Image 1 (spheres, one colour):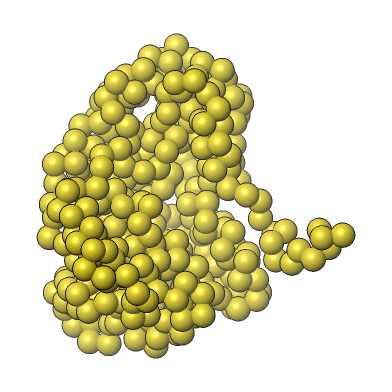
Image 2 (cartoon, one colour):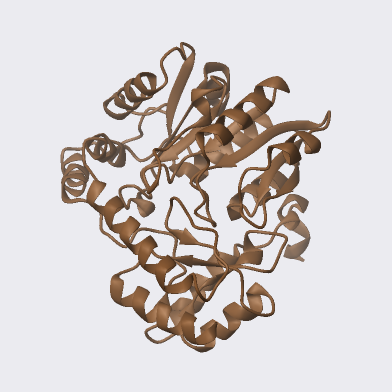
Length: 368
């Protein structure tokens, strides 16, 4: 039977629960969709024009595996300006941040290696670690989702290889402080651990400037991209920077997997670097405040400082039970157990227009 051909490594994790919600959304009539983790604004026109120009001018072949100079050189210059003193820091262009995450984990994690993951976490972290044969070690951050540095120290064993860090965080929207970034950077350096910092939401910081742990640890591997900041989710354009030996190893794997990021998208990415999205960030801060103001008297919420998510506690029962109840009222949310070993919370995405947000608020207040 064909099922006998399937590799054991695929059985260590399930299909994405978020994708199941997306499939459900397609079946509902006019749902109030506060589940989608992608911007509701469109790709800015200059970026679209650059993409079209690249296609029409014949820039459609394979790109260099490390990235086209038009984008890679610009990114590397920007990174070196932001992180002075990182003399051996190298960079390559990846097929989205998801591609960068996979390459980082496959390049660094051996079977049996332990990877520290903060719970709740982006759904891909746990699955990719398992795919590499690693062991995810979940560090509980409930109830306020702050970085528990003492728990990190307690979780480190001789098998610990990596710390996966994400700020602003999905699904909570919580943003690490400078002190927290400095602390996690120091622990990684002290124990000679790979620190992977997922910074895809860095442009969406509303209360304090973004801080990267790479400022305090020059061996930090940073994963970033254009999907959230410039609404280029379907374009699959990311980049990774870090110590040269790690980047070169990731590039070797990229040659035999993704090959390269799409060439015309890279030319558009070079234009994206000069295209401001400040107005959208300001608007998302307003949307964040709108939701917090409307729901904080009804739900237990840790105020998010970034990204475009809120992670409230379910007012009764489990998070998944509450989401089922919300769906019965045509409101699409994501249950928290998709991101966590706990089933107490649910994720709201406010990457939606104001009308949809207001409709969602009305339902949530009724269900509280």
